[in-house]
Length: 239
Image 1 (cartoon, rainbow, N blue to C red):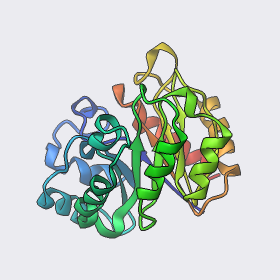
Image 2: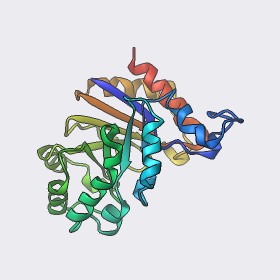
Image 3: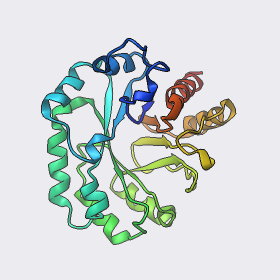
């Protein structure tokens, strides 16, 4: 079992002077980031794919065992809302191929206004390729039940475990990958700083989940808490 732990992005200007040295140019931020973490989520692919040259540069600037999780296109999840998206899904995969063996997972984050629809979920899972580790993050509480997890398990699609103020922290493993996202808690949301006791409890829960690879990301980027919390959790998981 291997843990991939990092943040939901690295290009945050408010990390300068906190995580990135003041005199470090932004073009060197990724090189600094990879000294501390072995994975990162790319959020920009949710809006549009960066150019191939940019993707190739990221590939070249990272170690051989570094991985990127690509966030699935909002056209598929938020505009089409999973309906008749087979061709769009394949196009997304093709655009990401330049990242090759450094693709960790594909994260499909559904919108909060998309309620449970088993038929739609089943059709979407069938459109996903087993050549990639696909993970779905549900953002409406109607999806959090055993029947939905059974559909994911049938297609070897991961269930995204989340820590967030407005949804339950349901811990389920539905594929050969464990995937966890920390968005923050309470009214603070992305400014929330997870405490040592919380992270220790999460480490214990994560250790109990059996999967060849586990991907864990912190999205509480405000004040660079994501960096600190990711490093803390990594320490707890290594004990």
